[in-house]
Image 1 (cartoon, rainbow, N blue to C red):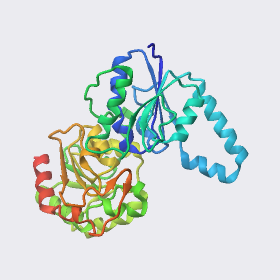
Image 2: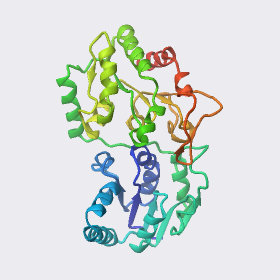
Image 3: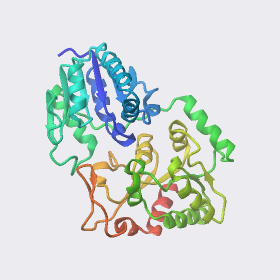
Image 4: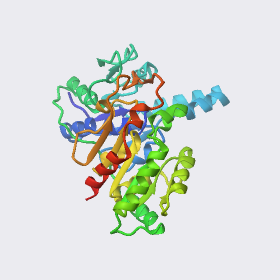
Length: 359
């Protein structure tokens, strides 16, 4: 089949988008002159907008659409039709629909895309032409491997590429400027610490996080024994968490929580010596940049959402207890043990892993 244009539709977060990059690499290798267009949400857009693999990156922000609908049904319908013609005019040969949503599947069918490849989760893939059944969600193997399985519908044998993130000189220059303003020199050993992560979990994000006091003790130990510079990162909603750690340290640290955007953050991770974080987007960015990283897993299965591929650059902490993982079929079932799986990860074992990666 002649393939000129492929659409990748993925409305989810940072990790989910980066998990699709091995799929994109395989497509680009097998269809040399193909134009690949990525459709993502506004938050992820800064990571993809300058990527050389994509001819174009489009934004679909469902929350924005919902707000428009609240204000005016007429304006909403105009927006839908405008978006419809924007997609239709491209005349895509194939779409990889990673949304797990039948409404989006119907929309893509209406746009005239003849070959629609994706997953059939709870019969939501009924408008797909080619699909893999996913009755219980992703389990037992990495999401990236599920994506690669979709290539069988194009009679392609996948290669195990890693995640992919392109940072241009402007992004790196912005990050260098941030470092210089905060007194970080090129020769300094810097540890990027993300004590939050998990904004998409809302009120239950607490259950994804290693205790604040553990992060504080670890940062102090890293400062005292390894003489590194600590940089705290996080979103606006995590400012209180990072400020608490900052105030508890006996030595000065740099707090960039809520102060820089995703592009600058990615550049800062590229310039850092090591990242330590709970599982989530920051960890996957570090993987995509091939940076040394330590990641702490609680409710989420590290076999499904963890390191890919496994490398010596990454140390994963995940304790085996009977109720773990408790995040299954895209739902968190709750916790009656106050994060026992995370609390069992000791400060000392994380410190020793950091020491090994830094030396």
